[in-house]
Image (cartoon, rainbow, N blue to C red):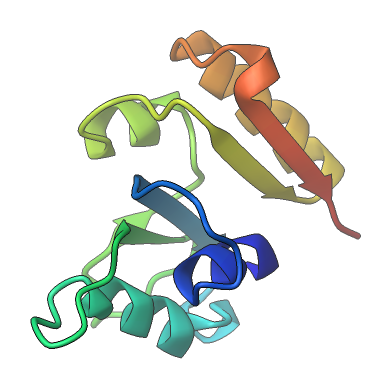
Amino acid sequence: ISSLKRVMTGGEVCKPMDIQLFFAADTRSDLAFTSDLDAWEADQFNKSTPHPHALSVQYVILEPDSEWGGLVGRISSKTLLTSCDAIPATCYVSGGSNFVSDICDELAFCGVPREMIYTSVVS
């Protein structure tokens, strides 16, 4: 999230871009940084201070409660192909080593060149 924060708060200057973020967790309560992400997503519609980047956040959880209306399951090529308007040119993947490895394979399957996939393995 720190790289995205630098872009969305102006700490890193770059050309305007469309950003699609798939943010996964086991349960809704496990989702971190939702207030920041939701605020950055809403900023693009703020007419007094429009944001140069268009952010779309898709939350994905494994164990939904009865009120959950978002995506359910694990991020996969199916999730990406059915939820993205277009395959992104650059992808950032962060998570456990097995997840990172699996999603990199899924992105490559969807047509994203390996050199455009940046990873961060967390434990």
